[in-house]
Amino acid sequence: MDSEILLTQLKANHLRAEHESGKDDANIIIINTCGFIERAKQESIDTILRYAEAKSGGLIDKLYVTGCLSERYREQLSQEIPEVDAFFGTRELPALLKHLNADYKHELIGERLTTTPSHYAYLKISEGCNRPCSFCAIPIMRGKHLSKPMEQILQEATHLARNGVKELILIAQDLTYYGLDLYQKRCLADLLNRLADLEGIRWIRLQYAYPAGFPLDVLEVMAQRENICKYLDIPLQHGSDEMLRIMRRGINRQKTEELLATIRHKVPNVALRTTLIVGHPGETEKHFAEMVDFVERMRFERLGVFTYSHEEHTHSYTMPDQVPEEVKQERADYIMELQQQISWEINQTKIGQTLPVLFDRKEGNYFVGRTQHDSPEVDNEVLVDARTNYVRLGDFAPVTITAAEEFDLFGTVAK
Image (cartoon, rainbow, N blue to C red; front, side, top):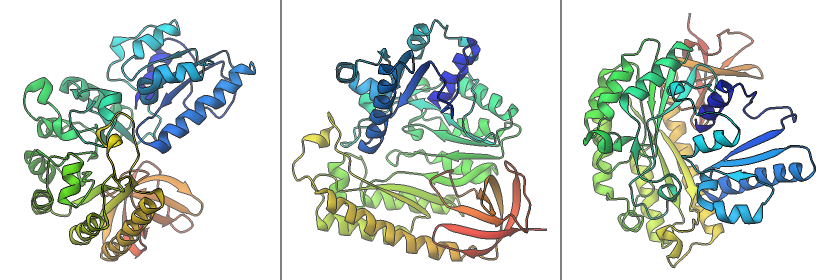
């Protein structure tokens, strides 16, 4: 999303710019980096090094780096990769534009050139995080929580809807904290009601809701408003009380299970997505067994697992009892095998149902889409045989489910 805002500003300044261009004909390269986990950091560094080599070879004129990695390691990177002309942090877009002899155009607030398919878009409602999680470097890179004014969010959402966006995916480091800094109260429910009134928005999806202090009025809005997806991404990280305490999550397992029961009671047919971390310092076989039991009991509709990433300057970085990499991977594989079976069982209950599906793309002989229970790129998909069915990409169609695998559904367009 940050890249989309940058792209909009560049084009408004009459600078020809492309997102991940397929041609190697640019004279200025801007790399927007991620520094959240080790794999993302390495990918960012590899990209910087590739273009640094291109600059040394005279293939490009200027190289700029922005985003999380630049915010966190600016001094170190500038010493080790001198080919980069300048580094910019996560909130230094005006400074980057100035380097390009461009002006930051305040009148463009709310406008974006989307880089996702035209029918859905991510909508960031806040930046930064105030949570003290032991393993997380986001507050280091992104700073304290800063809510975006509600009118600005609505202005941006209105612009997206006018440009054909049908699905808004609300994102933040912590959705449920929204409004506390600006309005001295949690305002996510109010924001959802106002977004749900916008013409043209068929789906509103919530990603990254923190469990501790979860605002229960959000559930009432989710249940009442038809265009708010019955879907909630709520990263829980672990199922052991001791590990939740070590991770500084501010909630224990009993309260977590009570919250999940409340969500499922107040929002029937909700799909709960969570992410877990295996191999955090101090995680024993006993703690891992408690996580396994937690996953078996909660039967999440969607689940992802990360192996612990050792991040400098976090509380966890200095902790003893580091878990070997091979043990982390074994535990992650075990959880995903367990979830695979749970997902297969849940998917079997969908056979025979007719569900609204939003179609994203065509791949081989299949049109590929999603139900309201699935976020792009990370969740299940619905496949419809393109040889015997026709749908328009970016449109909704009713699909009768005829078969199901662990993570995919198959169906035909209902007549």
